[in-house]
Image 1 (tube, helix red, strand yellow):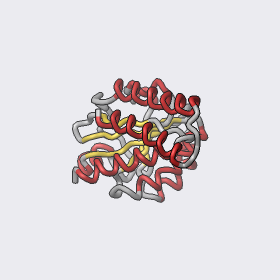
Image 2 (cartoon, rainbow, N blue to C red):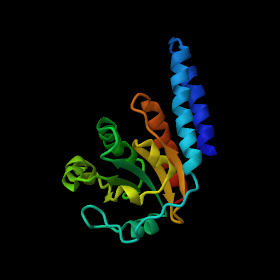
Image 3 (cartoon, rainbow, N blue to C red):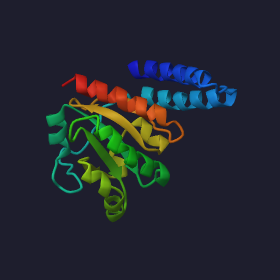
Image 4 (cartoon, rainbow, N blue to C red):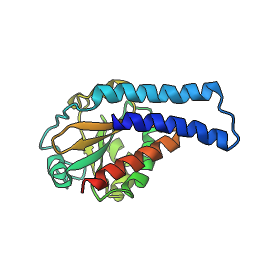
Length: 194
């Protein structure tokens, strides 16, 4: 509920910012922003409060962390969900954005959950991310049973120790301010529960 309200406020503030900068807010621009939020809200409603069921022995790609242990230790995680079936430009963009998010949170609070047929490709793609201290977990496609999976795009979500999903967010490369606002909100939420 809170994230939907934040989303609505963000749309209004973006439109006002455009007006203040002297940019005219074209109906097409507002419609595309509203369309983005409508899709996010649809999947958020379907996915929020779902239970995230995952193998308790899921090990990180470099085999240094168990997912369950990390979740218990941190209490909450922010997860970037990617797969080799997602748009490769979208996946690359979000892996680059992880440095920004990681800088706002404690070590190991951000996790990449990836489904790639070719593990070598995944290792090459995420090499820089692991250097940031972001654990990478590889999981089969059929092992993630969340409604948002049908969108087949990278997305973020928060996972609490009771395995409930919240704060689902679908980033859009064309709206970087939205991603930044999400990072600010999710960092505030996770840092306030410590």
